[in-house]
Length: 261
Image (cartoon, rainbow, N blue to C red; front, side):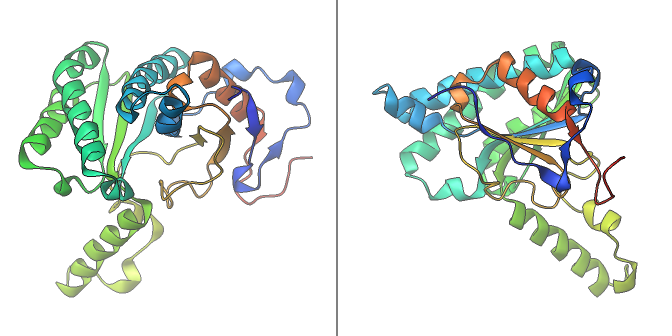
């Protein structure tokens, strides 16, 4: 599969600026980049390898993506690592994915900590076993005070589930008398999402040539720029990340306002 653009979709009614050719794209850096890492299985299939090989190669692409984000000054990087729908996959593949997660928690977190990376996990983590949840909590605790970049890993995550759990929390507050329905605002709702305290993504990237959000950050991506790349995730590199940021810099983000003259 070619590594160029298959297409670029414009989020939030965005259009390229008229002076796009004069933009210093390296000076326009999104604070938050979110990535739907897609194509591990197809990458492995094309090479006659087991799916686990694709997931391992995808883990190496995570390291390249994180390094690129740090080098370009991105402050938040969210990676869609394991969706709520992934639980329906074959038990052996689910076991392989969770084993790979354990390996990186045990062997890579200390290195990320030294690099100043803050790690945060979002999603329905209660679905994982107690020992894995403890390892997730230890990784968050160890890196809590780091400020170089915040790496959010979406695990057992679904955008609809995120919205529903936030609604449940607000409903419970109303039922207990701690909150009145008319006090619920978008800001208050956002504070109940798993991403509370994290700015919404400026750009959402999906690899593998697919054109879907696949239940990823549905609330948070309301005005995100959308970029779709025709490259399998295991092949993602710093050049692709630079292309994403260049594309973002050439977008005019209006948030519903009229285009600039």
